[in-house]
Image (cartoon, rainbow, N blue to C red; front, side, top):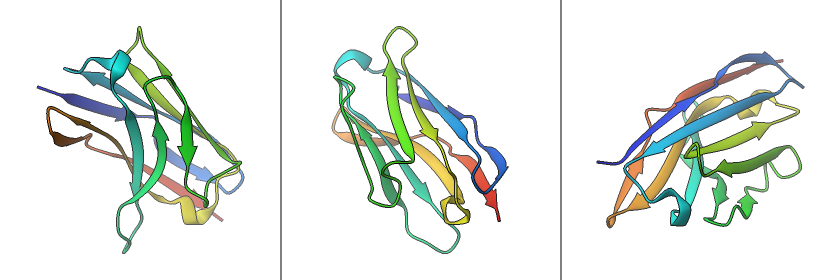
Length: 115
């Protein structure tokens, strides 16, 4: 069974920073691509960052230059470092992977950015 557990969300003022973590289990983490999605109030879920198995990452245009992503194999953890947060970054952030031919999601962690 695949399990993804996010943490690190919270409430910050605009311009602040947060680091989200996602611990994965039940996957061959070394070879499994991961991703971060978010869903803001009244919005559809959107891709924020892709993290390839080799650590290469790509980002949505809306967060480029502000967010970075990384992964730690021994800890089976992916991270999303979010800097210069804006009110429009307010959302539930989800960790995601596709494994054994199906989609797996974490429970989500809330990020709230006040102006």
